[in-house]
Length: 202
Image (cartoon, rainbow, N blue to C red; front, side, top):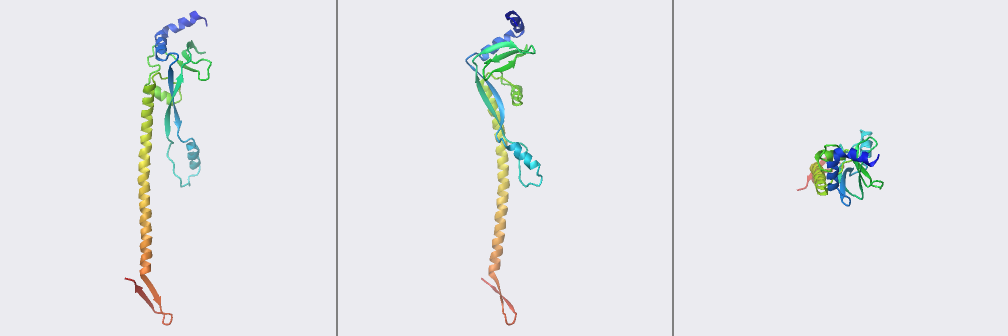
């Protein structure tokens, strides 16, 4: 594609191109997010339990997840078309962290930290965020909500544990009371007559 054709193709999105260049200029950073499993072995452990329904072990329906914000330095920026003819912005072309994002004519949310963009990113789609502060704020709000869920579960489990500990202590007391009662009542057998007498210790 020659330069004239490229210019013509960029005309419908020229405003967005200029906006992207201002939002994420070369030398700045853009951000992406990814969801990660806190326990990498959770699914294997859960599958093993599901294969053994007689197992007494317990497990939650899913493992904990955290959202990681990743910063990318912009070393170069290029506007082009992909093999399908879609307009794209290419960051760091030819480098190890090259990334491409589609530019939709008339779109106004490129680079913005919207709820929909965050959801798409957590589903594995590439979404580029221009504002690091807003991205971290939204990601950490979701992280805090996840943490709150696990803390609530932890507190609930601790109540269960307290109840079981209380039952253990109660059972132990019953055993001690029983032993004490046995020690107080000592039967004595007269081997000659066969009579049995009971001594009660005060």
